[in-house]
Image 1 (tube, helix red, strand yellow):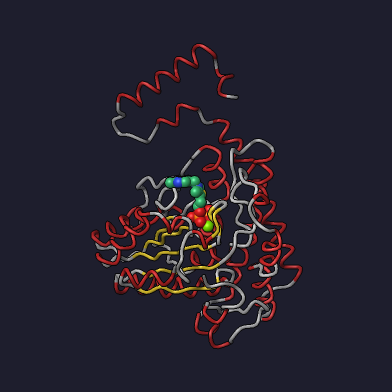
Image 2 (tube, protein in one colour):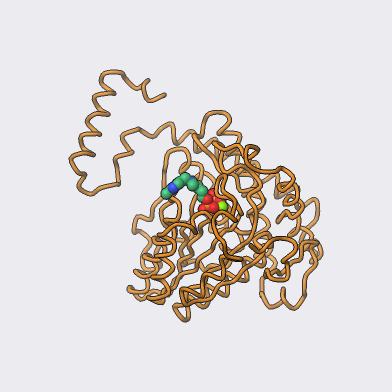
Length: 374
Ligand SMILES: Cc1ncc(C[n+]2csc(CCOP(=O)(O)OP(=O)(O)O)c2C)c(N)n1
Ligand SMILES: [Mg+2]
């Protein structure tokens, strides 16, 4: 397996770990100051929503919560590389991808509180839904983002649109048959899809060298007939650049790309996990030194786009936003009725679902609302 830091020269970077960079490489990205700053703000907001979610879970409000500390650059960069009419399919970890696309923190909390999803209701006219709604349903079934995104991209190609679908998934997911089938299909059918494999080196307690005997995941792309690239997943401009190139290729030539973003899951898998049982804390400490936010701050500061006062302002505003979003989501969730779980699933519900709905009504009649924890 390719490893940090020994193999740095085999991993695409724009900003080196010490914050230094090649001026020509940055100039070629043609990014304005607002976009450069927006990726920073997304990373800080992502950290704020993560922290607020941890607090809520510990307080018993959320059943489960995910950590994404250290992986923010692998989330924000790819999202910034998309156009407003492109689509994303994510799993459970990519808060920054959603935030960069304009999804609100409240909407993210509502999903984790009640499985709530804000859906386009076809009122958007010919332009279709805005970027924040151009996403496939949240999925927690490992690896399913790939076949879903591939099917979606196939459908969009068939409809004659020019939008691209980005599928995000992990190193663990990459061991699933669905991921292989999806990527193979995309290569055969020439589909406008980009595969963003977030290699955070762990799938709960399984380390990446128990998932693959290959040196990189990116190399797999050759077997599907398209390109693969390995980038530093802690460098937001590297994840941006690789995704941008892949998106352009997908749009212009219907050619998929596999982008492997090499990063590290510094926190636990979720609030149900205790990583001290299976890994060495020294490894985590090493990765703290490669923090993606710190690195990007050094870069922005060098370009006159960052000061400690600006950082403080962004952090305070992100924390206030996360708190407000959490309070509001909890209030909205409390107003939702358990029956809603049956809504908007089937146009014509099958008998088994109808019988479950009746069972819920009977329980309510017998025990009252208290049984639902209200
Ligand atoms: C089909 C399926 N099997 C098992 C699980 C339990 N599970 C949830 S996340 C996960 C590991 C996923 O690892 P990876 O793809 O590397 O993503 P990461 O969590 O590291 O971001 C597992 C096994 C699941 N959700 N779905
Ligand atoms: Mg993983």
